[in-house]
Length: 376
Image (cartoon, rainbow, N blue to C red):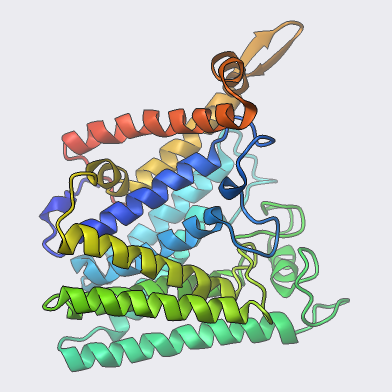
């Protein structure tokens, strides 16, 4: 549905830039020319651990939480909230099924589906706890904080104390953990991996906590507008503390994106708060805006960018080009013809991903100039 973000008086430019940086990073890491030649920071941690790439998804959910607090729609009728979540979930199913739409192997959950579920749960919590006045905002923040604590501690307890049938409690291996067991029970044959899914059912609950931490950040931003310098300083301090707690928790509950562990929630949300505080300081407080436009263009049509990127890369793989006695995908053909001969393997792979981003940027820039904003 068309919507012009510039008409929203509560819109925070730094947040659009943050979203744009996150989306640009997503496009680059998802579309290398050759997965065998990728710079290490552009890869996810194999299992436990944290790389820059592991920050992208939680950063986006964190931004979703902030956006809920800044949007007038969040306190409006219930129907648009459920409609928006349903559309985002349906777009995720579309991307998962495209191009063959094989119902016997169709992945049920995924990135967009998780965004939809986290948005829905968070919007409901925000709407049910929302009230006017500084004191009531403090009350709302206390309730949201309590829910975050319950989600993170409850998930930690479930993953470390509840034994999997035929296994042992506290097994956090890919196949032996409780989340994977639940996903196999509910979605066998419809997951990203045969035996587990990084966007599975149980791990969606701590992902909701990530989004709620964004709500807490949004609430703080809303009450600190009269003294933005102090607000930014407090946000930075909070980010450092939360990130430290996450790194400390890592010793007993390892940071793991695939499991979306509680330590991962805090470590990534803390870093998101740190980056956002820096962006608010430079952009909204100091007024350094000359460099922001490209990221605003990417950030104001984020879901559109995600869907177009997914459809584009799958289509390039789907189209076959003759080569000798066989054929290769159009993606492979273009990569080997236009990039491999002119750069070292990792640079060629990165250049291919950057080209992908540039092409999509032109599409979104065209939409931006015509004030077309598809916020589902």
